[in-house]
Length: 551
Ligand code: GLN
Image (cartoon, rainbow, N blue to C red; front, side):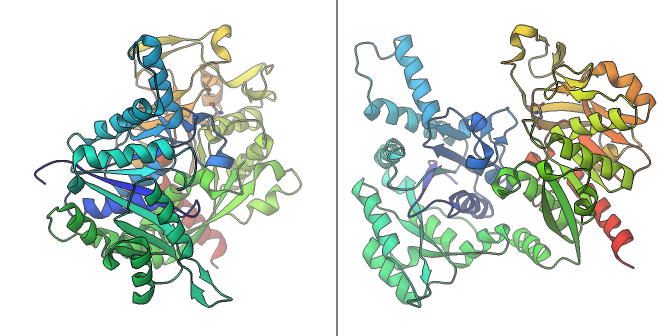
């Protein structure tokens, strides 16, 4: 597309959880299907500098990018829907913006001036938006929170100003709102939408397009009413209907004419969108031939948001195997020696995901023992891999007090520990840690290379490549003092860092599929390119299902 980069700002109204992240990602997908180069940016109004320190119960999963930034989970949607690799520049919070302005103030950059929200904070926000626009046709910027929140005001002021800075024809405001069906009245109600748009207009932003989240298609009359009261054209009122499968959202938007309208308003010419791959994907998702049940033994069993990428990666693995994946959330804290067999016998595959904190550790270890002994396919991710090592050390190698020093600092057999010295591939230098740094020890974050050591392994069977790269987010590592004793007992080390000092993948033999990895493969799985480990784990679980449950 010749000419300037265009900006689409996505705001949300009425209430949270309407799916602004998915809507933004879907817009990105549609524009990409028209051959445009797109990037996405999330602006979060909270004051944490990044979500790394936030409780997943409250805020959902922390998504990690290749460069090791801990970001909002919406960046996960962006990477899954659009062919982009995001980094630190694709997620800004109020905290990060203020941090930068205050550092500049301390450095003396504003000498003589009074530092204020307008223009200093708003300029910083605008710069964060503009810097993403290099080499792309369209930048989609999602503003977190809901219109009316105090925190989001500086962001809204900044995006209001951008239309003046870069020109009216280069900016589009899309507002996601809610149109509830009230069963007692038997009608769809437009008032919340009217109020939300009124609020937005009172701060100087007139939305160009409204995405109306609802459980049914909006009639012409309802659209006309919303258009009139909200001052948008009728064909810019788009039904954002609930869908069975999130990957259907781009298709529903397309049918409603959203991408056409966006391009018309931004005055961009493209060919028609190539949606075949999306259509095929949704078709496959909706009509699976098989089904498989995976137990996720974790801490956050109530909130699917806490394991967003994991759930998606499992569903991608399912799509590839023509299977529907049913998730059975097992609260590790409630598993004990009396009930674990009953609960886990329901599962065709067992997965222990990443995690922090000691709650439920012994329950997770029990479930790993069950998977190993009963030969149920097992996938351990990060903490799940570390606990698989602990389980093996205790029950196979008979190192009774084996533990991770994260949970028992006194253990004489810390099979998982904080490393004193290792070679860091990112900085290409030796890293050291002593007692004084232990507590505040930083995490291994982001993409690290890994070498697969054995062709005859589940890992190599999946990746079919000796060199891989995966994303990490953890402090503790496998303790090399135990490499020989555990190897002697049959734990197989199938992936390590290129220099060999960091264990990245462990497996056991004589098992249909048992693999633990120190990294988080779920962050790189895509619906169109399911992650090979998830694909193979689901395949093995499906085989287990067929063997055990089909007479
Ligand atoms: N708590 C473990 C560590 O810090 C595992 C972290 C994780 O699973 N992401 O090493």
